[in-house]
Length: 303
Image (cartoon, rainbow, N blue to C red; front, top):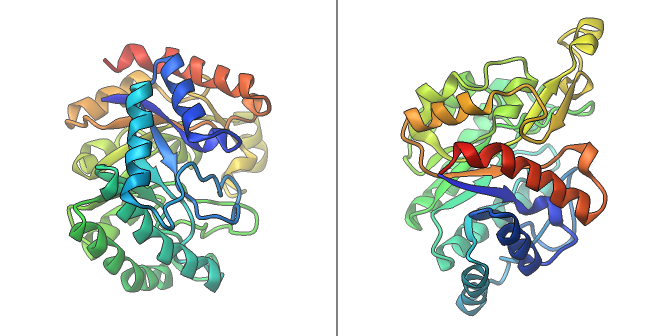
């Protein structure tokens, strides 16, 4: 396995600065965010460390030279918009940008691109599956043709304005099974993040046994379920009203068991820390501290 982090935490820094910090702390790789120009279209979105809209081989070679300089690899290119969005323009922009991210990964010699399936929060689950079956086969076919694997993150994107459907269909094992029945391609799989299962009061480790061959990439984000708030408000409120995103080691997930389960199914890809812990927002120094703590928690488990 390789230990890395998601570059979204450093939207105010250049790619070279991100790679230098990764090297200084001791990370092996970085998942590099590749949103299009123009800023975020949702919370935690919009970070662009590589602009893939008109990405040339010369630009790719420059990126690879930086990786070589700092001896830090790129685990995947990431773009997490909402391809099935109720907002027609957002959906259109996402579906047009994903192939560009795939093409950039080819120029960089990478194997993985990560994204969301998306969802239309105004439609039912069945209606969203119909949209999924209309939109995603062509995107996966493009990835197949380029020999790129697409890892779908299992974040439900549940907010007050998207409850209870969320903005990302791929939220549970039951839905993953249906997704892979619709698109059985070996190039279509998961970017597995245990925090989103913990947040939903589900076992974050058990699904690894069944879906191991579909796990292409992973995110390491912890989650603390606030039991007093859960007992006070119940399980039917927006999940983040009773849960708090934390860095690895400061929440409820047993990282030793999680890594063990990944090794049991033969996973040998990237484990990338995703920092959305509000206790570590603010200065670059504070964010670097969050990565250093996460590194100290996970490095003993990852050779």
